[in-house]
Length: 242
Image 1 (cartoon, rainbow, N blue to C red):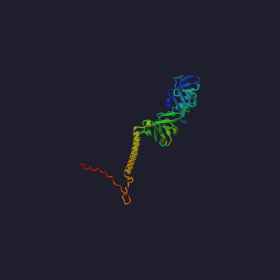
Image 2 (cartoon, rainbow, N blue to C red; image 1 turned 90 degrees about the vertical axis):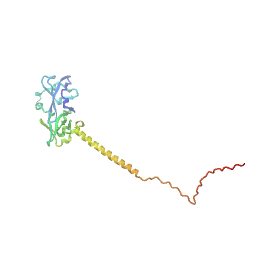
Image 3 (cartoon, rainbow, N blue to C red; image 1 turned 120 degrees about the vertical axis):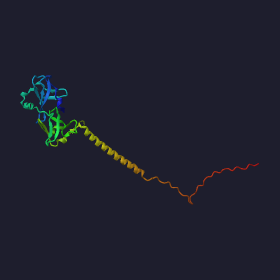
Image 4 (cartoon, rainbow, N blue to C red; image 1 turned 180 degrees about the vertical axis):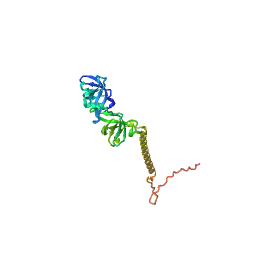
């Protein structure tokens, strides 16, 4: 996918002649097919008057240039009646409000992305609208949800507000703080519960009775011999004989 703005000012090169024929001035949209119909060539380039290239004649769209097979694929607008009406229509997506079939405003189109191999519009990037207050930046919606691309309004299917894709970088600080607070609260709750059960476990262990087996000392009886204590004899000194 390539954002539409990345097409603008790209050099256009013919592969057969090896010439740079000009630059991309603008893009022609076909609302019914939700795709690029043609590329408008900057008249300040190789040609003196404005020319267009049907998108079907584009060989490749690269990072640094657009290639076509040969110079003859760059034609005058007047010689292509099938594209003349689209050129005159000057349909644009960027800056157009997007509304659902049920009348909910999703926002304003800021950019659209194109599958360079087919020219099909794949998604539209929007800001503001229903998401205002939660978005600082942008959200996107697949072109599959778009039913009409008009001059004043782009219409999307009922319930398409639920299909918006919001990136974290587009979230406002207030929404990020809400997520952070909720996450922290959940973490604190988990920690408290864990601490409670740990404390309760320690308390339960401390209340367990002493299970150490007592030492039983047998009592002396008539049949049991009693060991006599050994009393050390202290020698009595004899009277000296004189």
